[in-house]
Image (cartoon, rainbow, N blue to C red; front, side, top):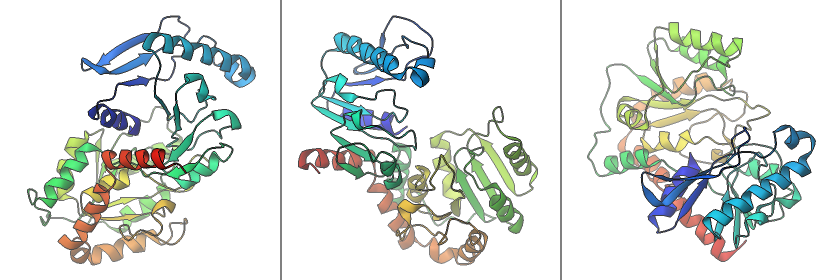
Length: 353
């Protein structure tokens, strides 16, 4: 969602933003441009592949030619652009120079395919140094820019600072919250189940989807475990507004990941939302926050120490959730709003590497 939030910030600054969707996988000639919420300066561009995806994996030079041709057709419709900002890590646009933009930004936010020498970016940003390493062939300055804090949680954080929300409320039972895809393959399910069984008097709230359509048997078993655990509440898909409201009654937020081929256990966009609530955060090791005083994490990726770390934190909850400690976390989260992240990016563009 980061690209959508950046688009809105650019719009606030008086820019015209064309959001180019990934091409649809059926063949059609027409390029469709539509306004979002009847805002003339914020448009979405939809178009289709000219060649089947087969060509991307077997005759890539033809696929690249077809994509370049489509980009030129788009530019003939909208006119020249000043900046092209590419969040795609699937190499849909292997050479950004086809956009003929004075400034070409490559901004991968997930671990995808390694990019070749011809990406053509003038500068590269990412939410993780590990992701930047994956694009080591890109011959351009590279910079770490953390995830941005979503506007809903930015508003929550400001209300807490202004004293409009009481953060000292004590729910009848100790509560732990998780926000995100509950069926994500990178969740350390074994450790999660150990934690939940080891804290029978704590209520665990899971906010997020748990679609079982493509789930493996192990993930299905994990979801069943959560469904039938007496101290777990599965909220399912929940709006950010509702999560922000319910977060007031959460004592501690947590995440429990494991390293995978597709996930380096480096960062998570939900961490800033956790911190924006002010509540103490205990998570498996995330390399981006390894030296941060704002998260409580084990020293290794094994997660063996995580259950004990959670129990130790819960035993000292009054200290961890004191107003001074909460305000430190909130201030850090507010240093990463999309407005401030955009200012950091602008500074890098102005000053160079």
